[in-house]
Image (cartoon, rainbow, N blue to C red; front, side, top):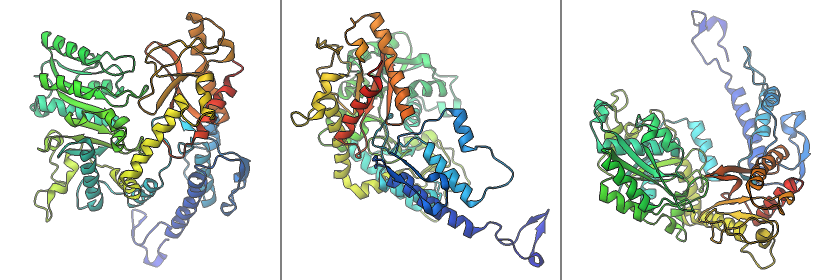
Length: 547
């Protein structure tokens, strides 16, 4: 909308009076795009039946097609670049063309809300957190001062208080941040600051050789954090784990004592509650005992497993977490609050977090404001601009209640148990799992001497991670040995390629600590059913039976 020429105010050829954007056109685009998102992403999120998918209202001819909704429509990078027409040009594009772009983005993106997306430690669609995301994207807030983000700062305070309660602390502090990796970096830096407060002003030059301890199964962000913070990856001591992937306390004690004898300065232990691959939970009480004896900061990376705290049945997995000094917990994983939604929580209530990270920017955190400036929490963050991520979790929690979130955890773990052990009614499809598939926690290799099998763990998985090998018919009669394992190593990547190109499901695989490639199946979404467990096994067999 351009002002009439006679009223125009020009400076250097730029019109200064009146709006220069077409608000009506923008509003119409938002309205049409939201309908497109609703139809193509939300309504079809859980509908995996074959049917006609047409959207006549958008006047986009290529939208009429008949197929089942796929997890992904795989295209190699160069082809996808051409299909998406990614080039940015001098002139803008019209309304209908932009809607086509939106449709293409949706069509060729991975549908992480599909019931058969099992690829990562996040999945599914929570409708309430989705609405919260729509709201915050429209409002575009930044959470650092009460004056610009009053609602979302109070929401974050309320959510952190409740999460602290579930950890078992009487009080505490915390902040939402961009991810579990960042939470672990917060913890490492905060523990170092507590050990040596002068580092904030004087830097690294006067410090002794700091060393930290973590599980051999820890998240890779521990190495990244040590590198980023100048501690050095050589000063990350990886403590041996048992067959289930749990840190061995006796080994931790031994490594701490060795470091002290060498003249190093131990300052931090990071335990893991829910390891990435095996879903293992370190023994927190025993680790806490060692930390107390040696005066070490105990951080618990519960990014994946922390949501078990919501379940009265499964919170025992984190027995002793209340003894931690800090905790990382990601509601965007098991609780489906939407990426990203990650909390870093600290037991200390003496403003340690703020003392460590504050820079006292006078243009943001003025102390003579007309309201209580304790609500200006941005100075305890390493970020300036910060998203209101807590709001997504708050909205889901308000909608479902604690009992609803608890049921979400319980159902995911029950489905995992069904996949691993077939604990349904006698004769159910999942009872056949152990007859046709090798489901491994890699606790011990107990050979069952059944045709087509290598072996199976005799213990139930602790969490939602189910790790297994698929043995194609050509290998079922082959003796175990180097050639067998070399051939089996090739099976999972080949099946993964086939499933991606078919688009029927997505499932991760990896080698792990000397074991050849295996599948890791993770159940999260409440849209997943027992039938999806059956489909997963049947589909893998269908894709791999000719290998």
